[in-house]
Image (tube, rainbow, N blue to C red; front, side, top):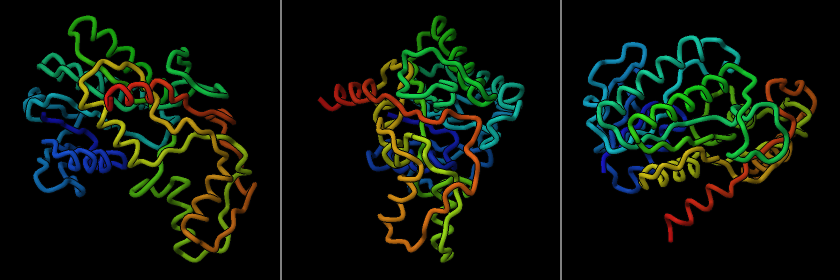
Length: 281
């Protein structure tokens, strides 16, 4: 089997490459620049810019059996209108060209922001109602691909990501900021009140799950990629500190709570666990 990974130089991409390498899968890693620092020996690398998409993208990616599509520009500015004004049409044109060129299996990274301002456990069967441009654009892309399926019949897994954390995450993320503060010897870590409930999942586990679903070749539809376990942001920070033995204390209430996400939400993992159980049986 041959797998292509777009956005391979990104946070999740590097871990997906590692998960594929661990299984000995032939892999083509692509990024805008063609520079994928974390590609493993034997993993081919190519440059692929969605803003200047070549007509032979499917050939450029080596006519893969499956594409794990992680590329998306403009993050972490979730409120930028460019997500649907610029990025959405590029994304659809790219994926549609691949499918019409012969691709039969696609795994695309979605976002929990597609659910909108809902509290509580979030289930794939709930109607999406995104309230920021990024979530709207992702949800619109999913709907476009579902219409395309009626024409071409390819398998689609929409991997709806929750809060990933781990090595290589952007410096602006909570996890990376905490690691940087502790490494710098700071005695306190300024943060929000920390009472909001979130669903945190180690990025290496997320990559393993995504690769497992991708290699199965099934039409899975929407799948929450999550832990299924709500935890307060405060407790998450305290747990990371405890696990690393750091001498740093959360400075609660320094920042206001974000207004672009619900106060308490997490993913329902029943569909994911059922799929993985079937594949491991």
